[in-house]
Length: 265
Length: 203
Image (cartoon, rainbow over the protein chains, first blue to last red):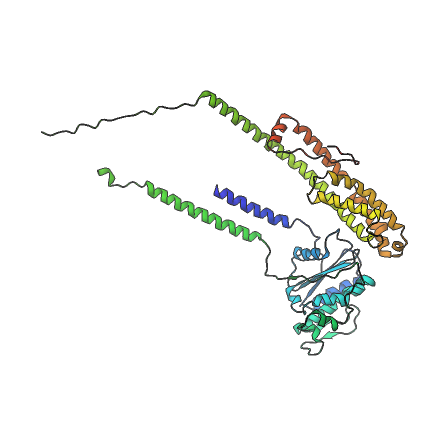
């Protein structure tokens, strides 16, 4: 009876975990998944080249025309999980028809940027080009270059962006001591950063668009029961039941044990 | 002189075997037969019910596609028409009702009616947008309104899944009117909801 109950509970847990993954997402096809077909071949190649040159961050770009009512940030977060992206990955989602975008980044990326760094980069590098100018190549290139540059500066990594996204010569050397403190520290909060920001301040000029905050994911964190945990729980429960059953059997046998000296009386 | 202990009197008692009253046994047998019949009927009709629910799930998928298309169309329409526009409001209402079915909130009757109406309302809205000069001036939205969204409406508007479900549900309900179906209904197997076609309520 107990075993049946335990198995039923384990099955229920398995069902619960399977329900949470019922939504399907498209399979990943490389680092650029231009489903909306708005990016040029040159931009796609530049993203791939940058990923080859710069190992601190891997940029993945997805474009869609519409999301069918799904929130862009939720979709981006779930896609990040569905594609098993890791701490050094940054997923940029552009929803062309809805004029929305979202970013999900791993912990290694966000820790190399100041607080709200990605929001500032989205505001200054991507927003206007994406919404007003509809220069999708420019928006993506500008944002990716800005992010890569900031991360390289923080990590002290050498980065060469020569020939990428229309730039002539731009090299970020290691151990650079110059540059605004905007990119390496963020002690005073958003208002201070926006004061020194290179881009326009976030305003209501584009009422149909919303900028999203980044999503931080920790590679070591887990959400809910994994299949392995369920198996482990099942093994522990079965071991417990068996050992308890054996103890009960031993006690029962001892109670029925016949005293050999009793017959002589 | 040795005294021999008199053997102890062996007292034997015989237990009287009690036998079950034949009438009670007969009643028990009838009850067990009824229980067996009910269990058998339920088991058989549960399997048929699963087939109906599978067909319902396929129809729900079709409705989900329409809901997504509806949201996409409303997103584009929202840039050129006000939220109070009757065409926008009508489509919003259809989408909201269809969502009740996809989220399992309602049994699908209202959603089916809304789903039938969705194609007409979506086409009406597309027609209004395509004649809007601001839309025609925007190459991207013009492409959505003239090509991508009409295709999506046409594809999601196919009613094959609803017809297939209704056929399955009708056949199931007909079978449930038999004796075994009656027993299955007593044990909790529900009749299938038949979805309205062409705006009529078949219930």
